Image (cartoon, rainbow over all chains, first blue to last red):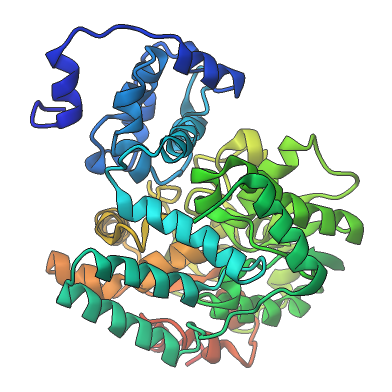
Length: 202
Length: 274
């Protein structure tokens, strides 16, 4: 961690005041960040640290200290690939990957400016593509919508050309279908009801 | 033996080859896969990342279908399997049925020795590393797996098929999975490391059971080669494709033809089937 990093620079700039709301809410969802004794095994085994701004043990420590702003705005929670290595190895049984998920969901709910908008957008479009298929994901629908999102953020000729080439190769091999298998009738209605219950909206 | 089958969305799309090879080899293993009717997407990484409720409810609907069908249910996709297990835990278990990942199901005790008797084309000289990825094993609190750090199913299978499985330390390391589209640069770093470590172990190919792993190792190989100035040639087989190959299934070439890294030059050099 170096001080070029806006998150950690912010951390060193002012004294940290512990708050209890966040760890208590996590505990209600059985996420026991309070059990952490900072062995850092989670960070030691994490394959994604090269892309993170806070190491996983820092996220847990800051969550324990109630530093909502720092953890909710961190890049770490969005580049975590949910490989479950940290959760598997934590000697205190903290479901660290689930803490990352909890924080992502909370960041979305609160409308926090996500430092990884493409990841957050991909997740939302993914869910929207399930809904569009009546309960089954259409990969083509998802990739089409995500490409439009990327185009809206700027045109990278090389990237789009490479994606188009890859798409064509897959299409030629039958691995990319224009029309996915959609569910209808009762099944679709059941899945739509689950989406409604969950409060999902794009 | 009849068993419920939950293929998952990508087996209808980018992992058609996996789906076809599973359908092809199941009868050779005396398995009848009964696809759950009107199954739905498990919600995958997207749901568990931003909507906890959907991440439990979507797989739960599939568990209801499996419960009604009354047979053990098998999932070839590691993430589908994982989400089914999490939903199973959340509801406090299933009644008289069990959720399996396809690899574990096909390589469980008692299934490998009958398989050995059916091998007509041993995969002699095929130097391979088994690459399990993350979610068939982790977290063990959900999957119930015992050898989650160093699984052996693929190695045992490869020995039965006559191949030469190699040991390496990255068999359960992450390929980046669901970040493939949103952050391909992350995939490049992770997968390049897998390529390097596999080559260092002396491998000439990967054997996988997860279609996300397959996609991230196969579809990206040309891009990663260019990015890192390498000339990687490491075909990525599904374990079911190798079962089909060793047991002389007539349609193996159709499955392999869908890969972007064509395995046929390797197989021809080793004089295995082509």
